[in-house]
Amino acid sequence: MDGQHLPFQLLLLVFPVAITLKTYSEITVSPHNTSNSSEIMPNDTALNYPMDIGTVYAFIAKQCWLNFVHQMTNVSKVQWCEWRAVIRPYNDLKTCLESSADYLNYSFPSTLSEMYFVSSHHMYFLDCPLEHPPLMDPPENVLLALIITPICLIPFLVTLVVLKSKDSEMKA
Image (tube, rainbow, N blue to C red; front, side, top):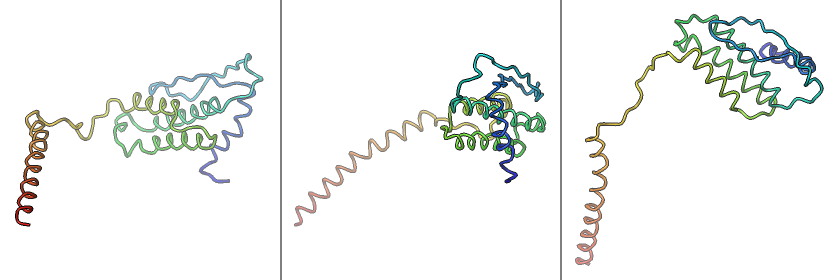
């Protein structure tokens, strides 16, 4: 058994039990409250109906998210803005969401996966400074020169071509 896919295979092994009992509930985790304990509350109204792929993917995506949150607890808050420190958890989140979507033939990126990425940025990376300042428009006088120059150059070139063609016709 491939060790890299072992957590995913274990999840697929345990998942039918969770489907039958409907024992998963919404879990809210913030960076300050990252305990992995979750209260299990069965939902008796939906015990015997088939699950659609979107629901299955939502459950697996939630597990990917909880794994990401757990990995981020091992990264100090000071290092949240250092790419070398967060690349592994971030890449694991992306790989988990993408591979489970591929396995289920579910579209990726989806609204749900994008929600988890946006949540990760809001929770962990919102206060990170930009390494490079954002690109800005040049000053108006430079922008005006860049726009006007080609516009004025075109009539000049057309006139030059017309005069040159007339000159070559006269010599022939």
